[in-house]
Length: 173
Image (cartoon, rainbow, N blue to C red; front, side):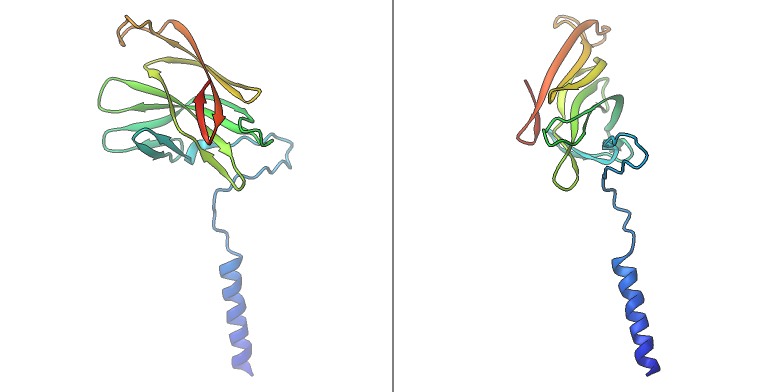
């Protein structure tokens, strides 16, 4: 009888350890108990570049000859019309050369969790000014150079690009 009780106890502890454990999976939930607005955090998301996907860890990705990091500019709003807040960010990508390539990307809500989109190239050594979301459209404002200016010249030409989320990607409008 003691063996049966001991076996049941072991099975119960095993069940509890397996099914009730905290996997520490980063699931974005809208816990609004503090009254604060939920802001999706793309710091550990994967974004699709032309050469393949890049996964960030704490807002950065480093390989042998390349670094990708999230810039400070961000915007929050609903870009996929599902009623949930999404995030749009700028990513800086640099490697062995002198260029710093800037991309726009989104972190979009889905049926279960959030997912990074494609990264859309904005320019080399540009000066980001702002990102905004209005009526599902993303506007990125930055300073660029004239076509006849070298990349070493300071960007002074105000430029804006507008993107929408279509077919799972950010596309220029």
